[in-house]
Image 1: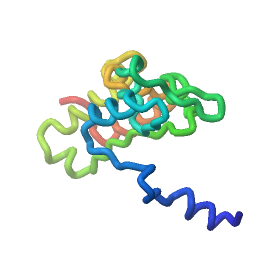
Image 2: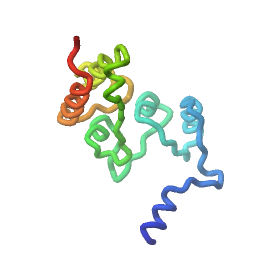
Image 3: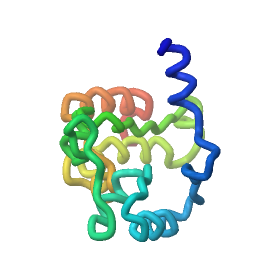
Amino acid sequence: MATEQRQILCQAVREDGVWTDMPDDYAVLMARIARDPTAIGILGFSHLDQNREPIQAATIDGVAPTYPSIGAWRYPLARPFFDYVGKSPVNVIPGLAGFVREFVSERTAGADRHLVDKGLAPAPPSSLRLERAKALARAGSPR
């Protein structure tokens, strides 16, 4: 099959009733997945992590979704979390620079910290240092 044909097929959403878009209410999605043992749901890791009794994760190419496999980009469905902040708003919006500094702080973004509590996998230390340096360059030092 040609690459272009494959891309079209892989990006198409089924319209035969097999695929169902769910509302943003994850409780509905979790109940539906738990009720049907053949159902497959695509959801964030935090929802899996908080609901391991009624559902189980799918491995992809032998890799299970775990904090280490997601944080190291080994799990094929891992995706980054982006928090975009423009230079002007940091200098204009009260508290935004402090928010940026806190968001990349060790106590928030480091391993076993607040973001992990919310289901986000921590970035490897080298990546976190790089992103922290960029964020702090934009937000400046605390006054």
